[in-house]
Length: 316
Image (tube, rainbow, N blue to C red; front, top):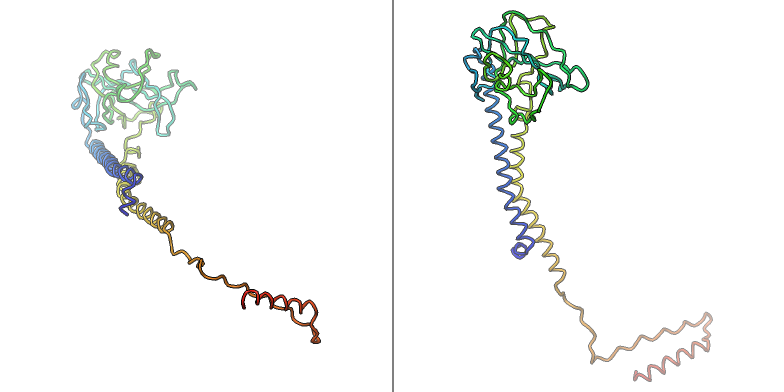
């Protein structure tokens, strides 16, 4: 086995497999850390959504930022909608993955601050998906809205490319600082994803609400609903299988080498003829049997004569 292990082929193979073990282990560790991060994120989301509604202006201010830890925090606001500065966000999908628009309307609070409220999804007006869509009516009067607090979208965080120019009242992201240039009232940082309105408006004034994060099974990190933990276990199984596979291959190659050496080794050669020994005479051919009736043919007599003469000639 040592002879096989010290061959060039096995030295290279052993070094390669030895490098794979820590690589597979680290890949499993990376997936496990992602599993823990996803679990922590899910716990944060569950905690924020189950919390009692807090006034949005108590958690966010104009010109500020919404901490990531407050993502999906349940918030509320009371005021009236500013329909004149309503806009739509392009290339957004609903729960059925249909592409359309999201309708965002500023809500002016009693303190004169504007809160961007994502009222929900609407279908596009044309096949091109660029024309301003038909949007639900803005509820009139004083309303109280409840929703999920979201940080401002940015081009970097969303991966959306900034457009040089867009039609009026259209956008590609929801960003309080960007839209504050078009809204006369100070805009509170972040925005709300609407979940309920009081008093409840007519159906014609409601868009399709944005689904909550609990409906996104891709964000879950448990076995059967995610991939991080199963991938971590898979990488660790690979790391444990490397030395086992190395040993099996080494045993197999050692046996093959042993069989090859045994087949190539010289065995006991059969003894050859003695050069000093007198060669044995070839056995005389048997005389043909006499025909029935006891009469010997002349050919048989000649055969016997030649045979006796040959034996006398050899000294028999």
